[in-house]
Length: 104
Length: 266
Image (cartoon, rainbow over all chains, first blue to last red; front, side, top):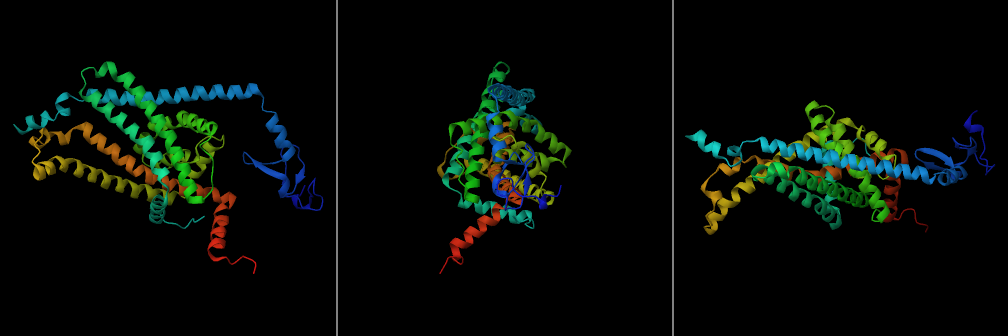
């Protein structure tokens, strides 16, 4: 159905500019809000906000802790590898004595 | 939003932004970067000269990784302040909940850049996208779920401008590195010439070629340039976001109203 022919569900005198992807009703600019790059009507947004269950929140937190641990482990691995590479450099390169030997 | 801006003009605007930025921007950047650099130098020295380097490597790497996480968090807050200086929009990042969300996302995602960036440098072409992605993630904070996707989308904007900027920044980083080398190498000899202070540094030139010193100077140069790179990405992100929000036009209109007063009723 053409959006330009539709009217807002709440303000019938206004043209519709968006269709809520959840309830599939048409709304004017004032009645929709952008949420995660989607235009939702206020009632759907409220029910979505209320619908986030504690179990899901806990799962998200758990995943975040896991990804933080993995992130820290990656950072540790990077610096550990650098440390190992520095240890591979011979001591005479670190103290510059190889330059004296080259000169002789 | 200006899409016709050249890379050089963008760098110039970023320098202006840094000049006009409040002290908190520099305080936050230094508060994160200086402890990280000190712990990194300490780590380099330990791994190069300590007899117990093998045994200390794991624990020292943990400390550097924690310092890195600390630095990344504070760099996000520094970028938030830069965004405020650029747009005038006040976002309350200092709430404990927001800070925690930003920090946790940064710890989760930024370490990937430690491996991804050198790999991208080796492959040459994707480096502008990979570097821009991690810089954008610092600018946006990562607290919202859409920030990662948005960082990638913003990294792909205006590739020509990105190439110019990265080319110029690489040259600038080389100049800063050479400057740091010149300063570091000349200080002991200046002390000897002006005040007669003799030290082991003036008796031999071999210390100048120490790998640890060269790596440390390189890291120092990188972090000096990094603040400019962050200012550049703040401007790019704000302009990129304005494509959908039109916020830049509203901002300019507000400036125009404040300056000229043309829309005021008589």
